[in-house]
Image (cartoon, rainbow, N blue to C red):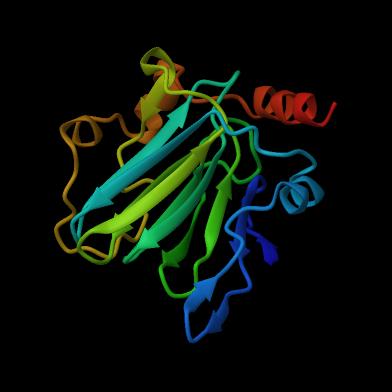
Length: 198
């Protein structure tokens, strides 16, 4: 298993070693000890979600209020997605910056997304099936969205006509979310990360 840090602090790409033989394939999707070595703490899994999307569907950009926030470990079980992480932590040196990682059922990569970072993806295939290991359970009052097509973010989604949910289509822009006070502060996120280590 190789773990590569993205340029946004708190996001890592995880590439497993896939063992192939005549029976098929085997790989370790998640290793508590390896994430602990990298992030300084393990992911306490409180909920696992699975979504199935048609080609061109964009889900996100989603985040949860910090504290407690919600860290995610994301993996594409079937098909392919372009997975995107956006730094939505006000005061972070990389605030407003985004990075993407292709997750698919060939390379079997996963993406770890720390609390306070926005997350979304675009389905590159039909029936793209994504599993998310989440550090906290779903709590609607703490859940927020930022518009995935906000020109100020400039995320380069690989779909000429992205399909959005009604919720995501009505989401505020980054500037509107910041003005409304729904984005987490970088220092609050750092305090959450420190509490995981201590």
